Structure formats: C-alpha cells, structure tokens
Length: 305
Image (cartoon, rainbow, N blue to C red; front, side, top):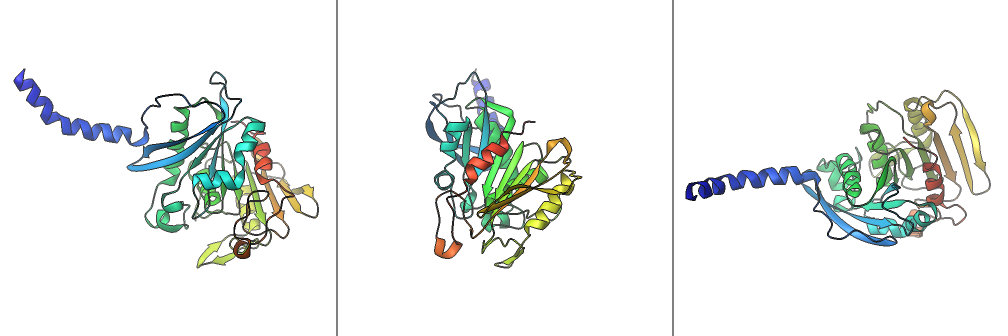
C-alpha cells in the first residue's frame, strides 16, 4: 500500500498538468441552473487564459426548448456589461426569444487582425475564445446550435468579421456596427449572412475608408465587395429602406441565402444607433429613429444553418 501511495504522489503533478490542459476550454459545472429572466457572470479557461462573460436568459426560456444564442461584442475600452447597457439587447431578447452572451475582451479590446490594443499585439486567440464561449454557454443553458449569431460594435464588429473569415460556421449570421474587416487574407470556405450598420459621419470608421490613428479602415464599398465575393452574390444591389434617417441596400443572388445588407445612417457618428449615446462631443451624434438591436435580431432570425 505504501509503495502504491508514493507512486500516486509521483504521478500527481503529471495528473494535475493533464487536468489543467484538458480544462483549458472547460468551466466548472454550475451549482444551480440559471433562472429565466436573470443575468449571471461566468468565467472559464480558453487556451491558457481565464476569460469571462455575462449571460442573460429571457423569461420565456424553457430548458426543454433550445433557444437561439446571440453573442454581443463590446467595442474598444468596453466590457460585456457596457455592451448590454449600450445595446439594450436584453429587452430585444425578451420580445424575440433569445439568450444573450456578453463576453469581455482582455484589456477591454479584441484581437481582430490589424486592430486593436494589447490583444492584437500579444496575439490573443479571440477567434478560439468565441468558439469556446459558445460551447461553455451550451453547457449551462439549452441553445439551438443552428441559430448562433454574432454582433459587435467597433472593435467587436471587427472581431465578428474575423470569426466569419477564419472560423465560418461558428456564427450562423453576423452583424457589424461601425467596424470593418481587419484581416489581410480570408480563407473562408463558406459565406456568412451579414448586416452592416454604420453612421455616415463616423469619425473613427470613415464611411468612405481611410486611416485612423495610423490604422487603415476599409470603406463600406470595399467591405460589401469582399462579402459579395465570399457569399457568391451574383446580382446587383437593391433598395431595402430609404428615408431621411437611414438608407439600406442588399446584394442579390447570394448563394445559400447568405444575404449581404448594409445600412448608412445620416448624421450619425461612432454610436450604436438607437442605443445609449456615448461621448457625443468626441464620437458624434446618435439617433433614436433607428433601433440597431431590433433590426439586427430580426435579420438574424431569418437565418438558420
């Protein structure tokens, strides 16, 4: 017995390392199931990094009926909680029937390719984090894997583009608000339905493209062209909405129903349209005549893998 005990001690460090590696993309099991209509905070390891997110489960949730999942990504200097406050997605989730996850970027930023902050400089695997996040949420609540959507603002919008490029299929459809594609090459083997929303007077993400703080930001026209090729859209553009606040267009003939739509808001700056306005003196005006969160969710729910 003594020899067996000492052999066990010698093996313990190896066992501990193995458990840590196996747990790199796993979280500890929940002690108690989350109640509908509540928000909870969670942590788990993605790779070797501890990551966190906020989870909202609407009142209509029934664990026997899987619900769509929306992953909502904050902009630079933001947090998951700030994204919930700015977007108001919890209210839309109640009316449309979705679960919402609000992850936190390391250093309040995301590695979206050529942007932004320490995650970009340190090569943080945020694409892997998104994939692991979906798995972690699925271990806590019942989600419909055929309806997992990704929406982001600014730096978060850049990341949902990168996920669609480098890990297509992670998100059934994406929506990018005030943030473009920041990866040089895309090897996506399939298209992803995409909705672009941006203020025409955005000082940080120029509608017609250009540099901001030494970093090139592609124009809406460039992004639409890239997405049209990736989604194999054979038709021209048509009008979806046209009024004195917003102008929306879409490409026709996209393969597999992988729509490409884009909306420009007149007089709006670097803001989440219809959401809480942030630093208007620095970032520009907002509008309450267009609810980006509602439009995004209604676009998403048209698509299923």
